[in-house]
Length: 298
Ligand code: NAP
Image 1: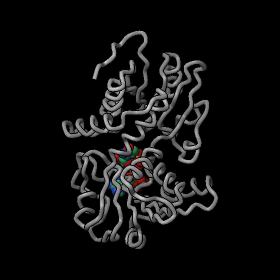
Image 2: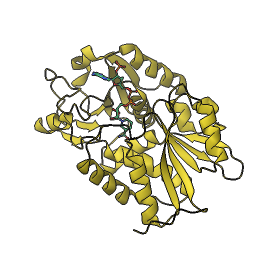
Image 3: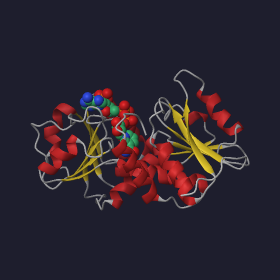
């Protein structure tokens, strides 16, 4: 790989959020740019909560940035500050990628978390559609994108969360966006009542994430539904306790690295107009995760 010289022609993108110091995205995107021979760079853009998100976005436009990923805690707050949003942002209710038009300076918001999750399911040949009965554990930003994607595919979705009102809020939001979506919410205490006939279980909580790698969001007392696929959106560690539990019970388990890579690949393609080197992006992330077990958002 030849890294293009940083000069007046260098095109800039980055990740805007707080904290972003431990993000894998700069490693992933800079490796992709170098592999493709593009004179582009991806930089961390830390913006402290309470500081001016609007000014930060306008600053990116003024500095000629081509776009950015938007991460925690700005995925919802950024939406009203954008010039336009895609349908995915509307149905998820969160933005994770912006593209800045080089000529007009207008900012378009999109959501590649949803498409990244769906692309990784497809890559792993996990079927989704009207025969899918999915349980999503958690009701935060990731759960919202995953639920929207699964509902769009025609799946029946149950969101299971410790705080049931948060799960109900996602259900209410999705019901307001679709005609007759097949989605409902239950409390984590009622997991055993809904678990038995699920064929896809998705962890969208941080339970099991480094450094708490011996924790799992799936209670030992609840049997896994036979034949289900378990998808853990966590990618640090690459194999979580939930994945180990599922495999021990004879289930197939898939980790969340592919979701990270595919959401990044979509953003890369939106910014550069070129096909993303997905295999390179995945490989550098795997290497970084094997060498470095620091916690942090992507
Ligand atoms: P979030 O908005 O903070 O939501 C976290 C959810 O997990 C909340 O619903 C919370 O429940 C629940 N939760 C937290 N701790 C829990 C515990 N000890 N027991 C039970 N439930 C608990 O976080 P997020 O942005 O959705 O991210 C969630 C995870 O998804 C992250 O940790 C990350 O690993 C993963 N993720 C992966 C990707 C990817 O590309 N692979 C992308 C995004 C996120 P309450 O509502 O009760 O507080």
